[in-house]
Image (cartoon, rainbow, N blue to C red):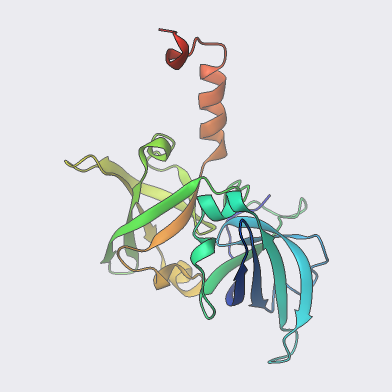
Length: 217
């Protein structure tokens, strides 16, 4: 479980792809301080398990953390496209004795969103993302969403004349400074996790109803 409050922006060292999986190595300082083998780290919002730690030697306390990435994760996220030098958002698992400053983030990415536009403001920057229809129904104005692991408040939602569903979020200076989201340009994709409460609500309301795909009405 995570909060969506990014602790550190790490750097991809290597991504080694196999036939249906990959091994990701990320350079970090802060999140490696008390991380043990088997610990959970959110990398751009994806919950991954630490399977190895290696001393980087570039600066004091810097480590290279190694993760196994399975096929399902590669399919649903943008991790498979990471390259050495790419900045990634990192967060350790939440502690039960601390405040929940963001929102409940599981690290189970639902899919990806595409940057449609970036609009600078007086003290912030507005990002507009396109969403696939199967995710758009879970996103509501003033609700919560995690983009590349960053807990954000949805400022607006809408649908373009061509049927493209979109949502907007406002990034304050601190978010622009402390995360990798400013690296995203128009056309880039980002990992998205919708509010888990919305998914459970839909499941509860639909449970027990006849399926329209199996002869129901």
